[in-house]
Length: 351
Image 1 (cartoon, rainbow, N blue to C red):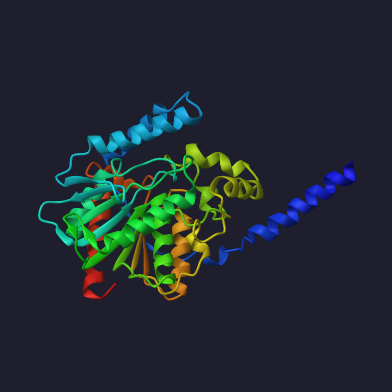
Image 2: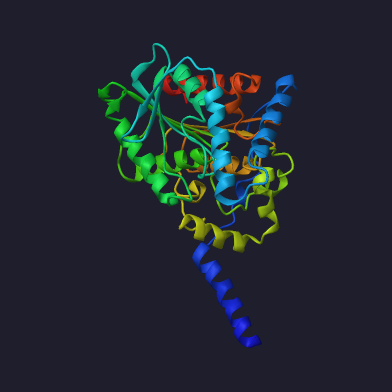
């Protein structure tokens, strides 16, 4: 019996290394990136209070009830947002147009929301899409992609691909060619953004003029140091995902394979692990205290080494995707101004 157990364990170990092939990417660490210093502001305390309210919204609940409570709370953030944009629902593809007054509908942004692939919606991110429409002078299409666990991870990927290709030829008024296109997303949506631009390159589809990823997930293997080192300082992701640091990584990888039906090393789910050459100008934002900091830094370093024009700008001590707390948080406004300046450089050919 003991020999049988040992044989099974050995087989699992071999299968893990053969199946996942997790290459060491530590050589990408340690590069210096532009960092914005942050002066403490009273609004920071209010942001922390809002994050704690998010946790309380699902406290004591389990399973589907917990997930539904989290989704409802996230959507309430968008319902409470004060926006000046016109919001128009769309059924095919599913999502909504967010159009600031005077925005040019031939300029378009595909926005892909975050929420760990299980939560979030166009409604929850209206404060962000409203700002994108203003700063880009563009009509924003926030895609309502299918979420896990009701749907497969790849279903959400397909929805984003279809929304982008549709966006090239359709605006809020109907069929019309896009003249300027941006793809943007945060967290899980940032992962979808980076995965999408690589897919567009590989399939010969018109690339966006620029891509923007806010606090993106880029590597589901969880091998980057900040996935462990920043658990205590990441007030949003730490309480939810910090426990994964106590589980052996091979076990996490098998769990990811079961949940996503993709290997955590597959570039569709982990864009860092793919070919990062010949990509459009890309801007990445991250906080120095969030768990996904090194995900962003490693992606930027690898893309830059492979010849793609990628910039990483970091802010000190910000919460994960602090952009959602605009206009309350001064650093959120700073971040959007940084995005606006990036897009100006893209259009002038200097990005």
